[in-house]
Amino acid sequence: MLTGGWPNGSSKADVRRCPGDRGDLEDNLNAARAINGLANIRSDQGDLDGARQLFEKALELGRKIGDQRDVSGALNNIGFMLSSQGKLTEAGSVTKRP
Image (spheres, rainbow, N blue to C red):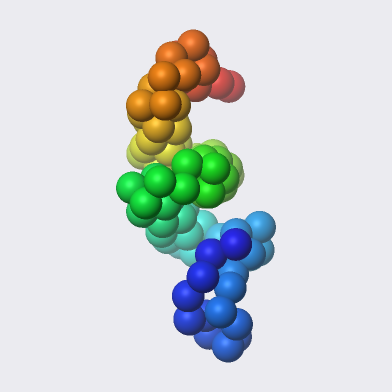
């Protein structure tokens, strides 16, 4: 869960139901980039599990719309995060994902 001021008045947002889930190409593109940015913030704050979840969501959206820039960015971020944790084998396998 993310915290913040959301339009529906809630103080939390469920990343499983983000704007990109509506299916609109532009919304998906914007959502993928925003989620990737949030994941970077989470990672910088030390919440690596939260960051991983968000990077995976950004990757899913990037693949859904076929945007190679977002796919490669999310894969790079996942790999970098894993390598910084010393998980080198897992980090190396990220680039081999279908």
